[in-house]
Amino acid sequence: MNPADDRERVILLTNDDGITSPGLLALKKALSSLGRTEVFAPDRNWSAASRTRTFHKPLRVDPVPMLDGTVGRATSGTPSDCVSLALLGLLDTRPDLIVSGINAGLNLGRDVSYSGTVAAAMEGARSGIPAVAASYDTLQAPSADPDYDQAAEFIRRLVAFLLARPPLPAGILLNVNVPYTPAGRTLHARLTRLGGEAYSNYLVTGKDPHGREYYWITGDPLTDEAAGDVGTDLRAVAEGYVSITPIHLDMTEHALLTTLRSWEAELDRAA
Ligand code: MN
Image (cartoon, rainbow, N blue to C red):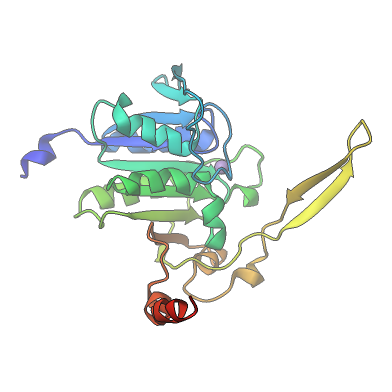
């Protein structure tokens, strides 16, 4: 046995829905059999915060009792801040893995760049720590208080799998989306690429009580028919599979870069 295997695994948990989110609690319960779970989560909902960082004011971190009787840490920062705080010294060790979620609602396609759930996992990938962003299709659940246990059980299976094998290269995170799953159904996974937009976008306008116009940017999930090509995360979830997409922090368009190199000389000539 590798000496490192004797050490207790440490899994850092965070989310963007806030520390009281039932998805986070379900995740903690499911993963606690795999190691020591440590929660650093925002004290409020930061959904769609993307990689917002707090640089212009100090942050607060408070212990809060979780519903399973353990203590988590609630921070006044964003999801990215939560992971940073843990990795920059508030967690007593470097975690073996970071899991962000389980988010209430899917994070698919090009819309992942808005996601605070994915952003928190990116903060792990930035530090070379294996990271998983986990989201569940709560919109399809018949209850307003959806049960995350099926999704959490799949994430437990995935995390056990990841911990037992060599880590992925640094700078990579896994974006995992679980379709709505009634109890008792076994989930199967597809490895996917990101699809297109997952939501429509439109504006709701109105007048506030003082007669002043307001504008509310909103949207609806696009239908399964709009889910796009075979092989995408959108298509996989529409067909009832768990989607697992490897995401790289390097957003460079490498293929086009080679073509565009000729611009260097052309721009010189235009000088
Ligand atoms: Mn969220």
